[in-house]
Image 1 (cartoon, chains in turn green, brown):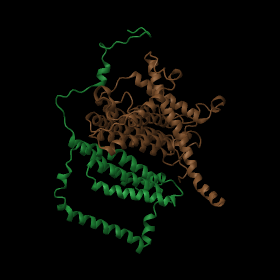
Image 2 (image 1 turned 45 degrees about the horizontal axis):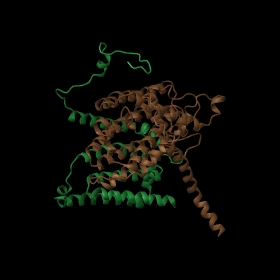
Image 3 (image 1 turned 90 degrees about the vertical axis):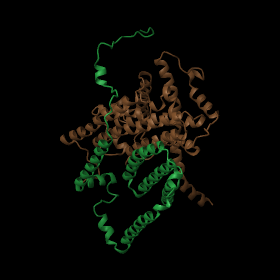
Length: 201
Length: 344
């Protein structure tokens, strides 16, 4: 019973904060609600027994991605009333995208209902959660069966990172840079002195 | 009637028991935080040949409580331009996060509130969230000093988290488990500080940056930012930040102890050492690290911002990244990779 209660708390907070993300007037509040939504999603993962994914969600999304996001939003001076002008103009596209997603979600759930063998086919590669911890299960899959896919996704991220750096990197002319090794290596201007306690130099 | 009372008791007892256990962790922790502030003032004054607090109580021992009462009785001021809800939420979040992390810390063999499988990740996640309290405080205060302080803090904590993560990974490769008790028990024969000394040093320095302590206390650099993110806070809202910061220091020392100094294990498993119970060893090791925290504050000037970023991204990150490769390479080469229980 407690588990069900906890589930509803997490689920309702997640949905509620999701709604607040798009309806909050202040963009910073939106981002904070987004973080709350992430956090509740992590709670739902814990309830599912996927504690590794839950912690990863918090470490990666809450701990790093959302921080930078919040960082940027806080520094922008966004005028919300200006943003809301022409809001309805995008309504048809939004309805179409939302409608497609809703239909797909229904199809997935209906798939379980109409073709029960599908779920057994999907669930085959993972071991039972009672036998091994899910960190171990994930590691065994990622580093054995899907190692090439794993490496490929790593390469995609690397390319994206290098791309971002080359796009934003600029040589600054005239800025003075500190060369710490050079500074420490100087001899003539540094003097070591042994100071007697209570007497000073 | 008796039956009903009995079933009610049976249903409620686990809840009451867990509350008792939580209190048994939080109350000593808060007392430790109070006396850490006292220790900091005393140690620094000794290093600077002063007396430090010595008026309130014998040897000034009641000073932390006097400070607490003072902060409690002061007026809480909320700036008129502040974003009220976020302004009040920020110190609560900071304090809450600094306490909630202690749920997974093992104080001795089996002496842990929640012995979860992914304990180290939980600690890492909670310490990573600490930045929100500071960011929210800086933004909600609606003051440029606070905001600059919080921006510095966010950049700093995110940067140093990366190298901390790699150091944790190199320890995890050696242990083969994410459970904190397993990590401690893997150091039964040798503390990880010996084979992984460079990692331990990097980790400790990163925890300094993560807790915004000297010499990396740029978020509250008095000289240029007054006190950074908490300028606008007063009374208990300030006290919560203060308590949170010091509880975080203790937590980070605890994390270093668990990862590198063998947690609750005695240094040698022989008669005079292993008679002392584990929690006392744990507390002793934490106190030693906290002394280093305070010592560093007295000994070093503050880093400049670009030097801080250089240290994090250009020195620690490459070294810790290389260390993951080297450590796992050595483990593979000498066939010492840990094989976890469920592995087939």
